Length: 275
Ligand code: DGL
Image (cartoon, rainbow, N blue to C red; front, side):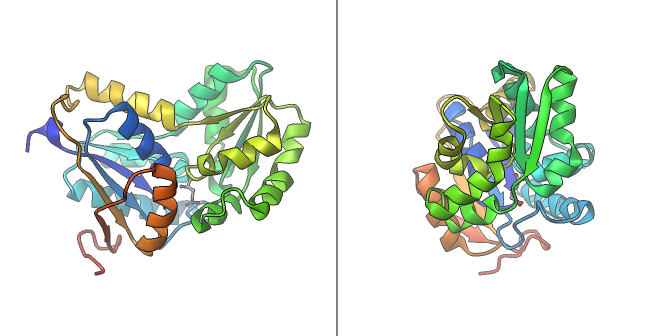
């Protein structure tokens, strides 16, 4: 297969990376996609650096075995933990979500007080703080880990009372500090956007990195001459490591298109299908 005809690989710990997939589908409608969500081992965000790195290499190897032309690490936790290592060992470009998200936040904030919410590992890594400060050192950043958001999203509880009260508990301290921008530094959080906006109020702008990441993917494909041409119809394939029914239920609700075909794989043994 010609290099530019090959699919883009997208990797996440679960269903949340579909936020990035959806934006790539919208901005780059000719590109085929192979998506892998490691639903058997989600969440990554509460795990150690070593474990996340091991899972990340397994995900990367799985996608490379599918002959992808580029890998997008949709997962913030992985991007914050070991993006550089993945980039160094991959024969194809590997794009993360943190720099695009940081860039978007810097472009949006007016009062220069930015909130960043993510998993425990992402917040602990300080990756967003570094990326934002690198662009504008004057910005004040308040970070908060919100570990209960991921199970809420995986369960499909996006806008019920449990989601609202959890969001209120996590976010009111940030709201009281006067942030005008809230970076959703986790794949899963954009699915809770309506609830988060209701808690923060209309004046606070929510930023997710999906849009900027898709722009960056398009820019890099263009630069290296691997953009797929207009006359091609894209092919989308989905792989998960567990519970495809749940992934389809939550994912289709969000993606607004069928998740088909979907296969269940064992990420520790790339290409070994569970069923
Ligand atoms: N994909 C992860 C992230 O963006 C969230 C889910 C998890 O903890 O694995 O940080």
